[in-house]
Picture 1 (spheres, rainbow, N blue to C red):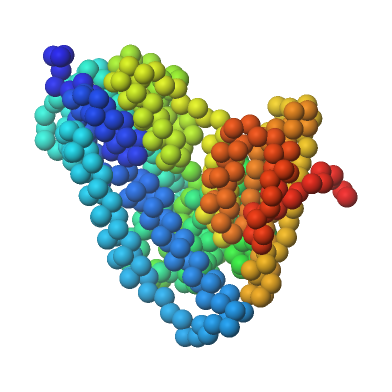
Picture 2 (cartoon, rainbow, N blue to C red; picture 1 turned 180 degrees about the horizontal axis):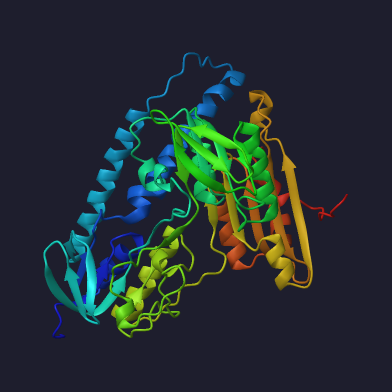
Length: 457
C-alpha cells in the first residue's frame, strides 16, 4: 500500500483509458478516472459509433433506388434527420451508461471534471477544486479536430464534433480534407440527399492507403455525383444571407453552400494538462512521446491512444490500454504489436485494408507480385448501378507470403477483418489459391486471382 490516494489515476475516459482503468482495478489497483465530457470518449460519443449509424442511414438513400431493379416499389421515400439524430442520441446515452457502470463495477472512482497535473503525482480536479494523488498517472485524453485558423472565416465551419448535432440537414455541403473522416462524411451527406463538394489540397485522396484504393474511391465518389476538387485550398469563408456561406478557393473559383465541414486532421488533446512543466516530451503536434510500454519521459506518467499519435484507431487504443494494465498491474509485461492492423473507411462503397500498400512493399522487399481485379458485382447487374469492386493482393515474390490485402466494395470492412487473420499469421498466396471459393460471393475473388498483374497489359 502506497501513501497515495490511488495506485493509478487516468485522465480521459475514452476507449483506451477505460480499458486500462477497468483492468487495473480488476487486478486490485485503486483507480480514479477523470473525464470532462462524457465517459466513452470520441469513438462512442462523437466518433466511430454515431458515425456508423449515419453511414447506415445514408446507405438507405442508395438502397431504395437499387431495390427497384429487384421489383420493389420505392416511391415517395422521405427522410427525417431529426428522428435519426434522436435515435442515435438514445443509443449513445445507453452506451455511455454502460461504460460508467462497467468502470464502477470494476471498483474505479469516476470524476466528471477536467483534470490537470500539478506535479508528478498530483492531479487537480477542476470542477471540485481539489487535488488527489496517484503513484502512476495515465493520460488518455485522445485528440480533437483541427481547424486551419489561418483561413479568414474559419469559424463559420463545423467539425465532426458538431456534425452529430445539426438541427437540420443542409441542402449543400462543402467538405475540406482528403482523409477518411472527410471521405466518410462526404458520402454520408450525399446519401442523405445533399449536394456535396469535397475540396482537398493534395493530389490524391486517402493518400495513406494503397494508390489503387485512392483511385477507386475517387472514381466511385464522382460516380455518385460528389464533386471532388483536388490541389486546391480555402482562401477564405464569407458569410452570406441566412445560413449561406461562400467559400473562396485558391484556384480563383468560389462555392456557395449551407454547410462547411472541416476534416483536415486531428491533434492530440494535451493543452492545459500541465505536462510540459513536468518535462514530459511531446511532439510537434502536442502528442506525448512514449516507449514500447507506453511510458513517457517522466517515469510514472504514461499515455495510450490517440494522444500518443501512434496508430489512431479505437481497437489500438484498447489494446494499448490492456497492455499497460497487464504490464504494470498484473506483472505480465506486454508490448503492443502494430504490425498488420486492419483499417476501414466507411465510404460508399467502403474500404478494407490490411498490411503493406504496394508502394510500401516495393520499398521494403526486393521482389513484389501484385494480383488484382476490378469488376461489377452480381448484385448491381439488376440494380443498374455502375459501382465496381476492386480487390488487390500484395505478395512477397521470394517467399510467396501475402503482405497486404486491399478491397473497395460492398462489405469490404467485414471481409478484411477475416483476411487480416490470415495476413498477420503469415499465410502464403498458395494458401489462398488452395482454398475453395464460396460461390456466388464478392470475396471468392480473393482465392481465384491466379494471374500476376503486369502494368500496361
